[in-house]
Length: 262
Image 1 (cartoon, helix red, strand yellow):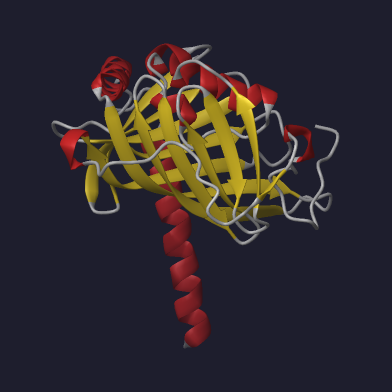
Image 2: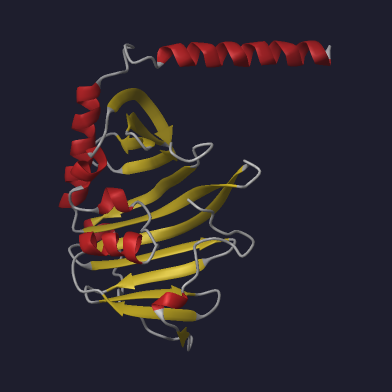
């Protein structure tokens, strides 16, 4: 009786996957490219118009082992920004507990778990800081692609395919869901419906790496304007942390991981 029920469930699951796959063909009713682009532009314009933004997030970064196993490294944190040039972000996981502060002139990275910090002079806007963190220091800001002032142009760069997937729910928030493709990545975004079209979930799949590992970030406790509590964007060394040089920063991976050739 148990084996029969298990077989019935497997057949049901296979049928559901088959039906689901057919529903998302490019010629289906959900493939409304114009609405997807319009919604993404609306989200981008809304985000750029908000001077003060605060949210919590949960993220997962997948890595691929040399045995071709995908493993997810999870973390949570907070982001508060005050345009054009102030930012504070935290990220805590099983192997990292770091806080980032930017006051428009100085960028501070504070490793709470080892009580160390480093500082560099990086005067400029949040948009400039996003690029510096990603390319110069290898410390990308959570949801950085969505927070820059011209996010629509950056996100749509090199996009070759757009799909409107329909409605979905993320953390109890009803969203519109869209899928986009480029040559190197597939990405999907869930945008809250209503007057605050903020990003609730963002998934990037890397197509030019084996097994297409994903990065996922899910947003909660979204706040803007006066609802955001006052934030201090300067570093106060209240724990007598040791200052180190920027070059001494480690990779964003646990001790038992190391980067491969790619």
